[in-house]
Image: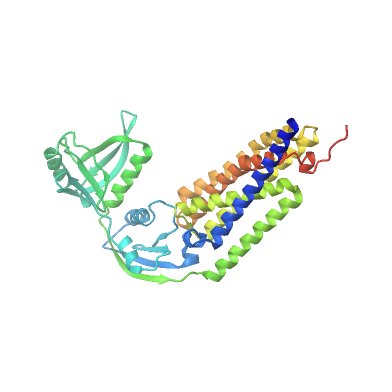
Length: 414
């Protein structure tokens, strides 16, 4: 009875491994040659360097300073790339111009509609009356109330203080909607008549939420009009042939990595290759789901995370081999090896993630794309190395077909 149970467990583990391999191969086939709706090529957004797009130059009307132009760039960044997962290039040129490059667009008029309007800030009462314009707002900032709650502070200028005093007197107990480009970004309730040109927007704000609202108000309050002086289509700088060559190079590199794992670790190397394949699917699937842009920098970040994934598997396997050489049994050696490798794998990956986060916050355009793919790739590679590879290795052990020779360690005769 016990022998029969072991045989069933053995064949069950083997069939599970086979099923995993078949499913992964099927996913790969469908992603490359499947129906158009699920084919990877049809769902990937390519960057300007790979697919071409729209190049636009905006000219500020009237005298402007550096602070005004920098704030205008921030407003355009939020409008063009609201989820911060694409890779538009938005940068200043000279003292009063802004260059915008948007990948994947083939309609310059659509691009003009997206970015060509001046950010418009308005304060509107419940009756729909505009009580303040953006030009009435001098500056928004953040402060703490009672040293605990964050609030957004407003400094009004020109006719703003008088307008706001009248509006708050007439709308006590009602909401005044703060609208940026006809979108409500906040709707505070008026508690009292506000005079003197100083006001506060209160609520359950975190520091980040208060800062974001202040930035939106500051950006929308700019008294600058941007005129589109150039709007044209640009071709891909690399082209489809170069993209194909890059993909082939990536596939050859992956094949070389898998071959290295197979030669050095044999069956465990095969399990690591399966985990790497799953990692690749998860990473690309996530980036496609959030509509991230694939350009050369983002592909570079993806390949860097592949290297981190391989490094994690090598560290784990070497720790297991050390435990087996020290006389531990196969299962206990695998458990001890993974436990010993956790600290090194997590430390090395987290330092890379921290570097990626820094690039994300301080970078722009393609730099953000590189950072995003690297962060997502490293986190998922850590997950597959620690959990998926371990599960697959334990499945191999459960077949009963291997001893310590699974990791190339000779059994010592008793």
